[in-house]
Length: 640
Image (cartoon, rainbow, N blue to C red; front, top):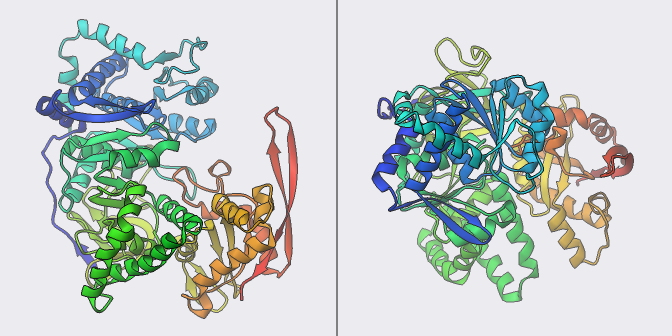
């Protein structure tokens, strides 16, 4: 099947800085562009405030020698300074690159070196230290600019400058360069590279995806055809703009619509801050929706009897009501009536506690989301929609209006063509497809006809909805000749409040499917305390017989929904969580399957060899610099 949709036009030379200037002229001091929570108080910045910060900072960058075509990296928490720095670099004709804050120094070096960045903008002391550690290995790096002053008073390296110092430099530069900023904005073209968005690197080093202003803006315009964004809306920015999806829904969307961006005080206060703001739109990665659901499920047993009863009854109603919305449940009027009653007895209070009471629409993407989880939130009144895209093409398909099916990623957006290869790989063409990889040829994945090979295995339904099953390279086959998707099983396992992560494996010469489980330490710990089970560490808790039985029960629930050949037959509770610092997860928290399977190869062999346990050694580094080893016996368990 080949799906083609008509094009979406944008203004011929529209750029993000030009949209910023338009909003400044339109709103000035009369509307808030962004808010930041600081010491418990929301501090507003109008469009005039933001424009002035960006203008002067951009002039400061130019005074440092930052010129059209230069690159800079931004490494810090999601704060107004990130947005100001990004737009300032673009206004100067440069390209910003976002870097995740939990990257190690060697990873930061890779981004700086690979992108040829001349400036690093760091959020705080921790990020500055990373830059100072690698600066001598980066001959192109000229300046490290930081915006958080705490802990920086005793730093004297000449490569350092504070955000305020660059603002002062910009003011002085302006004295001899009148209208320089405005003229620089006017030079910008829609096809200029706006950002580098590095891929997650699940199979190797990340690749620098070059995206133009045209591609970013047209992607959001495609979403706006079905979503009613306006300058009255609020959006909470807590995910890193290093992730292209949040980059589009927050910064690009704000420039297009004038909506207000809100920045939480810290990662620990996000849930509380979301509840205070009551945003109109939100984007959560699938893992965050899973964590939210796990939190709800874990707290219900500790509530009073009436709350437990209402949750049990109206959770079932939510699922049935969601099914009735997509025509899969008879007596739709009955379930919608019960859903209406449930809104007043349970859903309304639950939505308020989750900060979703004013939500118009929520989005998820970047990985598969459990259909059961999607149906639950749809059933309690959250307009939750899946989006399908990639770093190379941020938006390919999405749910829209009432056309939402939990097992799909939605219908193809306008301007895109999608078809399947003979092997079932999803191919895309047109629309907001990227401009290429920086320093790399893209011919290997863009064929002569212009079709981009996504590497995703899927299918296209008769109604045009795309179902993404797994990565092509991750589809496995067992000795019985059956092919299965590890991701399909993993997302259903993660629906459990007691399972944080999972790795499902199978071999062509083995009939069994096995799984390595990360238990949710917080939720399982609370469960253990309720059942008076003593424990000390994650390693100790995960191997408790009672916890193993708890995990077995959760796997059996998933197995009940599967064909006999597709069931998980063995599992282990791993003694630790998968860790991005050990290359087991990407910085966007996707499983690096090949790396993890290689790292746990001996454990995998032990599971297939029907051993009862496996002994592993882990190296640990103490705060005083000493190194040691911890030996753990991991029990191998069967599932009947």
